[in-house]
Length: 371
Image (cartoon, rainbow, N blue to C red; front, top):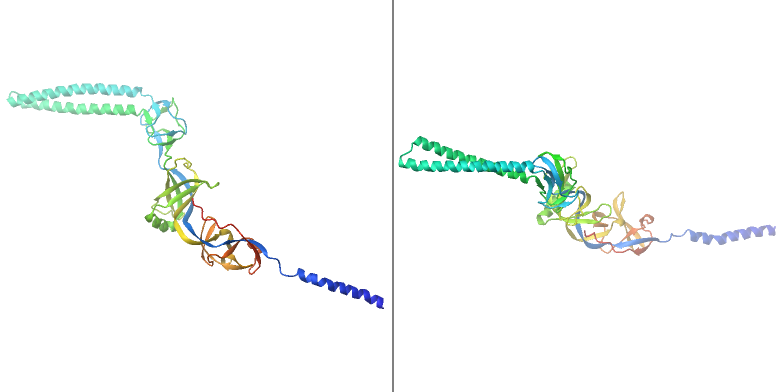
């Protein structure tokens, strides 16, 4: 009987010895490792963002003013051209002949006008002496006036012929970049009909972009103080392509989209901006001093709105905040935080309200990018 009882006591004893170990395994979880950042005051730009399109300030469809055969094209497709550069030459032969004919007719008219004037002057003297009839005098005066008018007409013919001859040399009306030559040497061009090439002014250049109509009052308010700066970047790489000034606000709201069109002017000296190109646009209206900012990664959106975990000592407190706006990677906090408080920026998903955390300070929040 005693032999049977001893094993049972031994088993109970072993079981009792294992309980303390089980109780330790059910104790509080270890602190959650997190990264924190400190809320601090910064000067943050007030900006609006949009997608814009590069547009030339001037785009010229070059046409011939006279018809004829193209003898020569004086530029390469896509070349930069300056105002006054000769781009196309039209066969001038017929226009040179027309000019010579007009000059010959002008010489005839000059001789006739001089002769008529001389006759009129002679009869003016005779009529004063009373030895000529008034009818003859009137006739010679009328002839002289008619010849003067004929002379003016012939001079106009010469000017017109000279102008037509000059137009056989087709010059660039603007400084910019030419497209492809749409007609080559040997082609017959029609006056004021055929497009020879398209020239886009590249320097300066426009960037057009839309903004919601609700932003109009803010933009106009800041424009009254100074010209807001506009920054454009390459959408994929974020490369800064240029810095310009707001130059134009459209006078109508697009009722379909509720947007207003704006244009900014850029010097574009390096020609990084190209007509038709899409760019990211940042319109900087002003700068807001003493803005309380934290990294945007600290913000969590819940049913009650924006929230952050605030670290006090080794505990995390879930707190509701009001975000005014974002600027780059930073969020401006309107309510809910104070300067110097620490917030969790990584590891929030493993943290609960009141939980212990093992915090590591992250690099200080970067200022909004200065474009």
